[in-house]
Image (cartoon, rainbow, N blue to C red; front, side, top):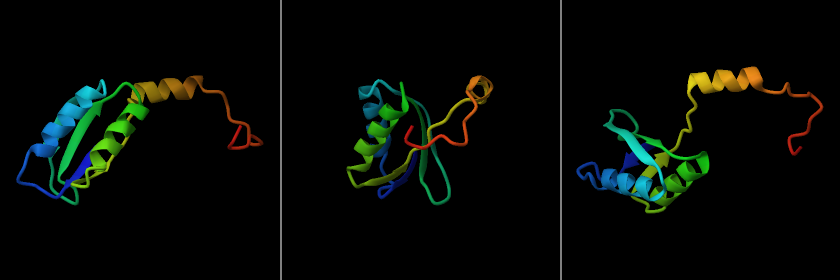
Length: 96
């Protein structure tokens, strides 16, 4: 999660992310304060992308932070999926 906060002087959002990640069966791996267009980067581990999305929507709905969520896959997992993936047919429709 990449977070832009309206209240840089408070660690409130950091504690909120920790609490909500735990409530969603996820965990915060590490949090960083960063320079640039965003203020904080939080690496979370969640059971699936739906859980990460739920956490992001819940935190963003409070209106005090703007969140970008970037699902990540390890290089090893990606390579394994690529090597075992079925070739895509060019005539396959997107809704199949």
